[in-house]
Image 1 (cartoon, rainbow, N blue to C red):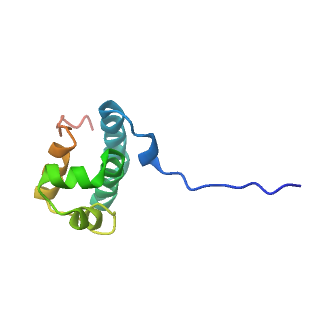
Image 2: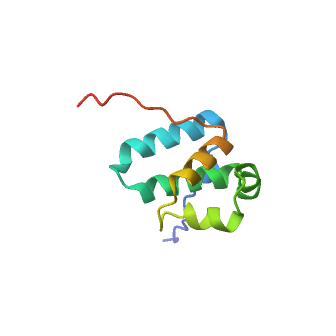
Length: 99
């Protein structure tokens, strides 16, 4: 029997449009359950899809800092989150919790 070869799935390869990026971020917010590192990682996935170097330039942050802050291993400042979201061309919205 032939061995099956697998490759690692990278969501960044599938986020092509701003609408796909926004939908992915919304889904991650719903799934995160207050896990800020999870949200940072989701933003990192979107940043890689868009191009980290250009995003860093647009956000006024260093590429190295973005890689670290959006790795999911640490929690970036809210200021960084806002700069990244703005540079990605996305908007954060709030709605009343129906619970």
